[in-house]
Image (tube, rainbow, N blue to C red; front, side, top):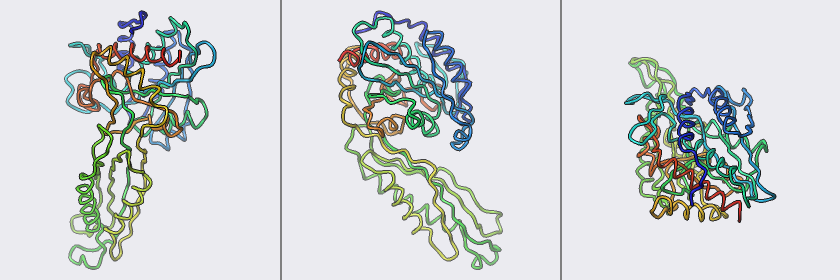
Length: 401
């Protein structure tokens, strides 16, 4: 099954170089990483397209600079266009690391560093899988595109979605960064809302003369936490998904201890299971907030910050799942199943265009095992090697079909 042409040592060196270049989002200053990645890819004899997102649009999405990269390799005549997508922006490292988060330290058979697993590892997986195909293109027909984008941590709207909206790419199938020990065909969505409650200031000695925005916010949060308990009773029918989630993650307001607060803001995160529709959930949640916080002198604003619809398995995805399962099960010597995950990813942007898409790559069995978004994030070298060979073999099947 494995491609005879695969330079593991060079793939490891490539990944380490990517990890050593910071691309934290926020603040979202990612063009330097993109340029250095492009040079590394050109060093592998790829022709790299640099697609700079307009600065105004980048700032509107809370970032500083974004350049998305595309590599296109054509084989034979006709055949499908297959996109391989991974993101180079990463969450800030935070505290608690036992190694330098940008050091790309290799120990105990793993590479440590921010983004080593999510998802700079799949820059290496996909690039070296494609390199293996270029070395032996016999009987292949179709096109493989590498989509290396830079705003997944901010929602993906100026990453894959922008490339698709601008008609820079139009693939027939897509594989996005994922985990070696499962093939992901579904994931949760996410809704972020900012709720602003306006009241009226008053002296603490006479609170009845004002309109207490914090009291209204308390009622809103009570309603939200009641809703969270209700949601726990709902379970998705898809494996790996679980229940919808609701979290109030930020609250601010007030002027002083002796003043009735006239303004309170809170932000909430609502995770959507694939059976749910984000816009309907937004309407229902907004109605619940307005009802709970209503009162004399209180004005409520509800603003959407983010809406990422869930990923559902779509028609045609079995074309990718079949060969992936075959090659992954053979390589890893265990049955590799399809599943869902309780997070959201850029894969949904391909699915929104009816492009069959799965998540599969060099990650481990789970987000927790990789310490993704936590201290000491890492990827095992043997998983990087296996995933690269599995992706290469799957692409061969898809380009020979």
